[in-house]
Image 1 (cartoon, rainbow over the protein chains, first blue to last red):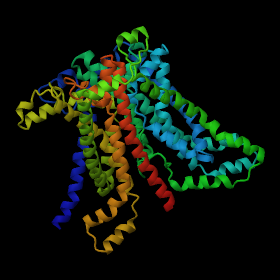
Image 2 (image 1 turned 90 degrees about the vertical axis):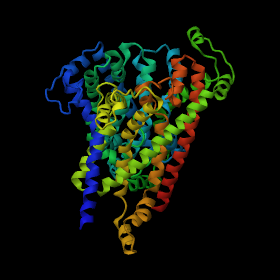
Image 3 (image 1 turned 45 degrees about the vertical axis):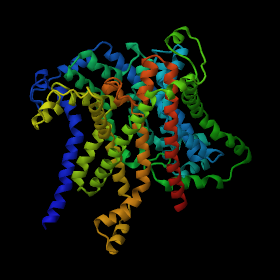
Length: 276
Length: 331
């Protein structure tokens, strides 16, 4: 009897401890962002923000070029995702629905491309972009981000295309649709949820990218939010309130997307590309 | 569900249906000739992008690694080939080997921690009641979702010398020398925080996927094991573990690859410092190449790093593909 009580309690107790461990850094980020500076630099930590203030968010967004960073980040990310979706849709349709020589080779190729060591290729990318006189431009950034998420997008969409019953497409073709029409009218609408979640994961990857923009774009006009965030601490000394407010602003869209996508994450869809 | 993208999220059955339906369908001859080209045309944009945006930088990296390219050459736009000088310098120097060894140890420590703790958390998830499981899942997903740069900044704050909450806790626990401890001041303490950060960020992926994998283990197997008189531990080693082995194998490799190239965490936390003592290979390539403007040298280091990663990736893909072939054969 005693043992069963014990064995009922310990998993829950461990879970509570783990929950606190995993959530605390996220909580502390938001809590610090909302506390007045006096509570942040107090000898004993103030565990719960009692007088909530938004002054740190004002400091964080009041930085020069803040809205440029936001616009740049959004432009680059959205364009990269849209381009890669269009390109991937064509490719994934071929990989999922057609039989042809070298099909498996293409799949393995994209799997390899998905694991590309982008962090290590920065020097070469810098040289290429510099030789093209495209430093401090959003164009190369968009193209490379598109490429970073393309293999993942193809491989994932391939699964979604394959999951649409072939009979639907065939019956549309029997009714007189061409293959392209059948694709547009039958498959595409059914793919909407798949496109949605795939593009969100692509969005997360491009939104978080740091190493490439760090090297390519030294000009503030062409920088993105990750640089704004990482430069914060040096710029503001130890203004942890503003730094945490910046972190919160940067993380919130991703946290919301991710929690929304969690179901899909569990189904194994995330493999590889999502991790920062 | 295992950790791989080759298999679509809807499960293998659907793909097989789609694939098997392909060749049997009668098509008019003219259409079939155009149809034979269609898949290649559809794949053309993706392949062109891959060659141009991934293949070219890779090739460029190799080319740069055979050049004497420092600030002077960079400004004057001259190409000076110097054969294998960069490689000779890198491979005979002490630094490269020291950094490589450090990278391997760092990766090993992280991956062991991630896999052991991630597995334990995953198994715990399977044991929990519904509400508690949801709570823990929510916590894991939050940690998983934190953008790397944001997470690193938060850890800098948690471990800040002044007013950092970790130092305060250690002080209150009676470790008074830690009250004003600077975590970025030594190699080991920097690695400690970076490791904690990486492990914190990576456990959710392993745990959640492992939990998902355990839910696919047929209950009959446990019943059969129980009938044969297996206890908790024995049914774990004879049913759960063999079932999860392919998953654990693939995930371990994935984590090795990810941790090995963990540039952002190491670089943004302490810039590879103090005294370049926490540089791992990608950071070393960056600091040598971009930071110290020895672009040729940096490229050579990058090529060597890529070769190591390529070996790891090939091995990982072999595991995944073999696993998949077995699954297809078994169905």
